Length: 158
Image 1 (cartoon, rainbow, N blue to C red):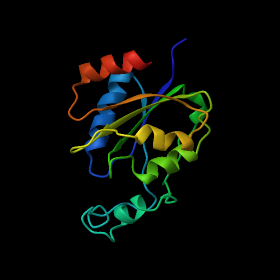
Image 2 (image 1 turned 90 degrees about the horizontal axis):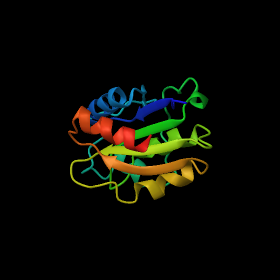
Image 3 (image 1 turned 90 degrees about the vertical axis):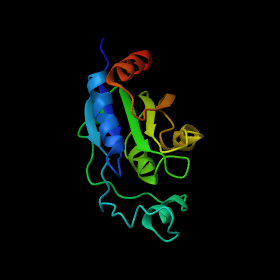
Image 4 (image 1 turned 180 degrees about the vertical axis):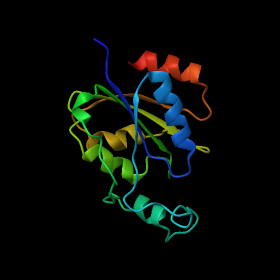
């Protein structure tokens, strides 16, 4: 039986979007963009401003930004590659919104991220409580990865 695979991603600047598209092609997966109900502006993403939207969200553990749309049939997927940029050494809070919006019981979730400098750190342990019945498997930074290496990685986790 072949597994049905989804690549779901949040991208603020387009970097994670490009990586997710390559991964979806390499893994023969469907692609879904996690879009905020209210799009982020450049000012919202200014991490140097203590009052910017992204800073306020990341400093509030209860923050769950609303998502614009839903995956039509999450139940159809066996594996979900979940991608995002690393913000403040972890996933943006909208990723928690996404995870808490579905029942991931028995599904495999594989994290991937893009980052300008930090790794995944404790991201997986921070996200596990948002999908307690999922099976999390590893994670990878895929900054500038070639499609061939993404295909090998995807095959190794599927």
